[in-house]
Structure formats: C-alpha cells, structure tokens
Length: 271
Length: 290
Image (cartoon, rainbow over all chains, first blue to last red; front, top):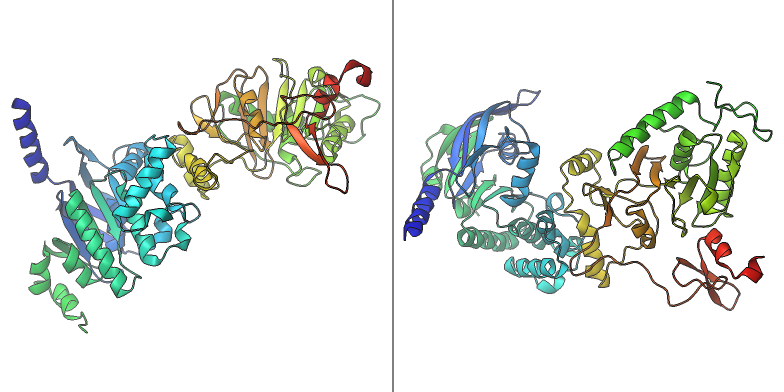
C-alpha cells in the first residue's frame, strides 16, 4: 500500500518535472554563426518541434542537445528514470555515450548516417542490445524480427542489408534500431526529408503511433511546417541562432506573434 | 654501441647488427615495453622503411630486429612451413645481418617469427613469438575512424564487435570466421590475433611464451605477456569452436593438427598434410625420418 502510493507520487513527479532542462545554451562557430542563449524544457511524452530556415541553428542545437557538440556556455540537464539529474557535459564521456545508446535515440536525416549499411538489418537492430551485453544470438535475432514488424517491415527481411531497402524502409529501420533499448528521449533531424509524400505520410503516421504508445519525448528538427503541425505538441522557432518564439504548435502556426514566425507561416505553399 | 656488433664470418659488412640502427631499436623496445605493460593495447611506433614490401612482414621483422641478440636462435615460419619464400627470405635476412644461429626446430628456437600460424609444439617460457600483422585494428571493418576506434577501446565499447559474428550466423548458420578471429585479452582489450587460423586461438591463452605483434604498414605494436588470459569472442548459444578434420596427415598420420589441403595431380587428387612442417617431420615414424 505504502509502496503503491510512493510509485504514484513518483509517476506524477516524473511527469511534472522536465526530462531535459536547457539553459543559456551558446555555441558560436568561428564564422560567428551558431546558437545564442537558448533555454527551454522538454517533458516526458511530448514532441517538441524546432523550426526555422536553413542556417538558423536548428542542427547545431540538436547536436548540442544530443551530446555530440559541446556548447561554450550553458547547461543541459537530463533527468534519469530514477529522477536523479545529470549535466550531460560535466559527466564523463563514458557515461554520456552510455546515455546516448541506451536512454536516448538519434534519427538522422539520411539513413546511411544512422545505419550500418554493410551489415544486415538484424545486426543493425541488435547492435544496441549487444552493446548492453546481450550475448545470445537467438534472443537478438528474435528481438530484431519483432522490431522490424513493429515498424512495418516484413520480418523475413531481417538478414537483408539496408542497401536493398527503399528509402522509407531504411528510415523506419533507423527508427527501430533506436527504439530497441526503449529510449526515453529521441532526437530526430528532418526524419521525413528526402522521402516522397505518400511514404512521408506513412512514416509520420508510424512515428505518431510509436510516440504515443511508448510515451517517448521527441526533439524534432524540421523545416517542414506540415510535419511540425502533425507531430509536435510544442514548437520552438529559431532565427539566426536565437529562439524567437515558443509555444503550443497550433498557437504558433495559427497565431504567430514574432514577425519572423509570421513570415515563416505565411511563406508555406499550399497546393 | 659496439657490444652488439656482429663479428660472425657470414654477416654482411656495412650494416648494423640486425639491420636497424641502435636508436631505432631503442624506439621499438620502448613501444614493446609499453605493449607488454598494457596487454592487447595497440602502441603506435615510428615504423621504418624495410628492404621488403609492406604485407611481407615489415612489422614482424622490425620487432624481431629490436629484440634479437647474438645468442638467440631464430626460427621463421610462413603458414607453418619453414621452407616457403617469406620464411626463407626473412631467415636469410637475419642470418646475414646478425649472424645468429637459425633453426627449423621449434624447441631449439628462442625467437620465432611467424606469419599465419602458431607452431603445433607447445611454446616454452624462454621463447618469444613474433607475429606479422596486416591490419591490427579488429574494429576497423565496422568503424573506419581511428579516433573513434581508439575511444571505443578506451571505454571498452565492444558491443559492435559481435556484429561480425552475428552476421556470420545470420548468413551461414554458424560462426564462419575461420582466421583473424577476435579475442579479448586480459578481460579488457579486444585484439586481432593476426590472420592465424582460429584453430590456434586456444594456444594464445595462458601461453608461457611472450607473444609480440608487429604491424608495419599500420605502424602498431601490441603484445600478450606470458600467462595472460585470452578469450575468443562468441555467443552463448553459438560457443567458440576450432576447426576439425576427418582426414589425417598423409605424411605423419597426425589427427590433431592443422591440416592443409594439397592438390597433387591433374586429376584433382587431394591429400591433407600438416601445415607445421617441423612438427610433421618430428612426428614421422622413426624408420622414415631416420
């Protein structure tokens, strides 16, 4: 009884406290570009879209968030499942890399960046499990097949190389490869870029279901406002390395306040 | 530094003992000491241009040159045989530049330079075996960046190493890697044991001899000190196993050694013979060997 109530409290505490707290994040490249004093929170189960034009610092921000690029100033604090917090750039590289391959996921725009193209789909999915110490081939193979079906790829293709997959399948394989360790936070860099419209729709549908099913938090970088509207709960608008507006997706897309957001929204072509 | 200068009648004039200059040998020995201190760790060294092409044993030959002394007895094998081109050339090279005694008998040798095999005769505590290594980095096939593989070694991120074995089972139903089979040394570093057949992997484990590995093109030296734990990677449901043959050696009748398949005539007749020529000779029945 006592234990039960503790768990309930933990659950509420977990959903109320931010999963990732970003404060004062600054990263300037030698040419003066980069990101400047960016602060925001991400909560469990929410999809946070980051929109802005090319060169606005979206990808730099994502790289900093996902532990790939150390910022010059500011901190990124991640809350683990046990509610303890870690500043991801003050912990050891070993710990950060462990987080990256167990608690987090990273989906690249080009599947070839996120997949090992010269080994089978099964090995791609099994890699993270092997990194956590699983050394039983049968279990790895079964887990790979299960995750392939989960992302709507025929499980009989488990031994085929990603090079024999279509672009949409490769992107779904990349997602499966990340989800296999049940991450809590996913970083996605233009996951639907380069896919044609119908494949894109299917992938978006799949993503939306998975996010809801698994209670994932997602940071989604996109320049496609339609994708942002469909997937994300909240939006950040970036311009010249600065966060110019943030709020609920519908609010920003339907009633943009900042002149740049207004420009962005009005420049979308409608067929 | 004249103490080591060879005075043997058959040595070539104009060369330092063991071809390399003393300063280079000192550099190599420093790398070797570090390698022995950190079993399985790849130590970079300033590899020199040797009078033979890369891939023919430039790494092994530099390691041997750094450790060989005038009292050593040298054996050189290539694929287990003492009489193949690579073995003959390297043996002659050291005979001419050092004047040390050479042998084909494993037991008599103090330094054994090898390509692709470990002798069948168990090595002793007073012996050193030098391996010629083409690609020292076992993670290279999965990760082309050197900076990344170094980090992976440092943090023991070896999950990806099993991908290769996973792929084997996925495509062949069993672990089809038969040579350069990755091992874990002293529960830390994953090491490429050079292209020895996996038949020889168990000989690496807890060996009384010092095992040195030299990669000339890649300029890396690594080592397994005597009595060090060396485990071959595997899966729980697909354990490591060595090759076995249904045939016996045509010459000596051995049934527990590594056998080569040899085509002997135009009709495609095949025989199986020991790859270790010295072991085969000593294993022959008395009347034929006498």
